[in-house]
Image (cartoon, rainbow over all chains, first blue to last red; front, side, top):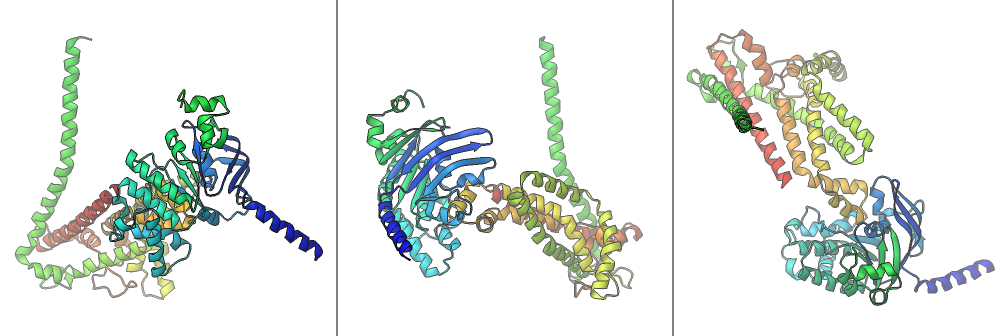
Length: 270
Length: 295
């Protein structure tokens, strides 16, 4: 009894500590595609309600790392992973991890907007529906909130039954973000979310990211260095599967500790 | 390389081009010629018998006095056998296509695809054999019928002939669904199965419709197997457990016994014309559905 009391005191103290603990933490993460060693000993800590950017030349493994955070790499044949990825302190690669719960908590926005070939309403209601919400009124509320979150409600409120693929690319990407916010994730992974967009649309999506930051932890992969510098709080620079440097965005861009980082951000390669 | 070499080359190029062009047009030309051939003799029936008697006549009896050329029993026979076959082959084919396209590991996928294609290679007469010797007695005993040669027997046998068509086109449609749709769904926490029936199948729906259409086209034109196992009684069918007679079987069975240029002969051509019209329309819609998919 006494022992239990002591134990629970200790865990509550630990819980208090956890508020400052990182949202995602990778420990000695290695990833192989068959015999190709794609990620080498990655140790990354992502903090809550901040935007963390991953930059680096194409093929450096930044998308692979991102997809390791919600186990989307599971879909690819021949992927092998060692090490840990902890979300809220729990290793998601542990045997018996609830993948559905994980992906509900760690959502993803893709490089090319990928709305389903359904109506706007059905796209957003998709997530809530598969997680068991059937009530029409409730779904309507969720759709309205989700569309308001991405500033599309006023534009689309009378067109909810339209086919989603007829929207502009920017609206499609916003819709995909709304689709995600409808299942209220805690973490949003963005894989080059603006690479299909023009500069104006990119700017508006970046503004949206600042809004989203209030409620979500965001990890964004981008090969646009300016974008990383503009939007992120933390930046990680990757090269050939290694996380070369990780720190506050300002520090990484102004006084990089590593020579390779400096060479990359000054445009010597990439 | 001399200059004359080049001119010879160019000359042959031109010839080959023309030959290919000719072949391309020939295909269309043949269809048109077949249509006219059918139409010429088929429409000749209406000189001696009214279209109303033909299209709405409830009796097909060329030996009666006067002969009766009502297509309704044959049409219903064909429709019944076809619907039965589709009702069996579509669920089976869809399940098979989903398994091959979405679930099976790669090595198994190759084996299954080869197997399905092999099914298409079985001559219809062999299916007729199996239907006659195995399926018909089975149906007879199962339902306690006087004969096992029924519409149901025909439907089951034809289902196996439609399945290869249905599976291969459905499977193409399902694998053609962009990976990004599936990833988007899985990333929202959907299960594999939820992703299949909520995203993949709706996205592949026009291809699926096309496959069903082409399956129907395949079944409705089939002759040998149905002639062997559907019993060939030209009556208006009331149940699947009765013998029926299809349009194709009627033509095949009676053509040899008619006098060229007789009313009976023209009537069979008219049946052929109806069959042609049906398959033409079905193929047309299947084609439209496939084009929709590509968009």
